Length: 332
Image (cartoon, rainbow, N blue to C red; front, side, top):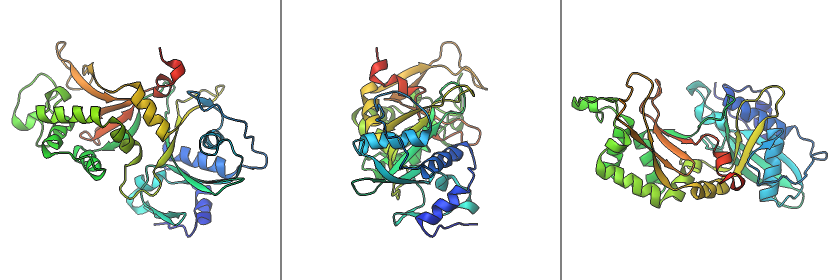
């Protein structure tokens, strides 16, 4: 049944009693609940060192302190309320809903949480928050963008980066779209016949993409972090990342960045590169003499999805433990 909140207050009432449909949405609701239950008269606004790679404590409190330090110059916050928006885009069809925040219709958003903050001496502001979380003890790659070859090309076109047809075709080869696979052309090969690897795709298309990732790294990085939906009224301003699963006797750790900060740090970390790798698992293991190229730029890794449900999807991930690798104190 479609549920349309009548106001921000009504939306908060709904979300106060709502349980997440999966771990990701449970996390968003947890963070929102923490913020909405805060007593700001007793809230400790000790300055947060915004130059750390990870923080320990409650995520909602840490996030507010980080926003206070970066957007309000540590000014005391009078009030804040958080709205969970991440489940809107992923909800099943019969649970799709529309919500309004500050008079703006939110159908889909790259922000998983929207926070309204009122400082003591100033006007209230709204911030979009993208959340990530790792559910195992060792940090893994966090998904940033998941679409198709055409979907990603359309996203760039919508954001004024023109992608020619031959480049779209080469990306379809990389993803293994039907009609663009080696097996569609009866090509016999030692490695996976269901897709072409990066070094095998159409040369003109490959050169186009490699030049684009080099020349437009900043623009493409920002698009992937912020521009998932054309009608998104609250693009992310911050990223909150639960870095790993912890034992009962351990403190939870979180990485927090402003998106602007993260884009700069990603570019400073590295430009476009190609890592060598082999397929060593699955039905189509590579022979010992065959290696492939994996495109990377900054902390972003690009790959064919390969999952059973979505084998031909194009996937962009954040490199595992990127939050430590890009921090200045951890660079060698």
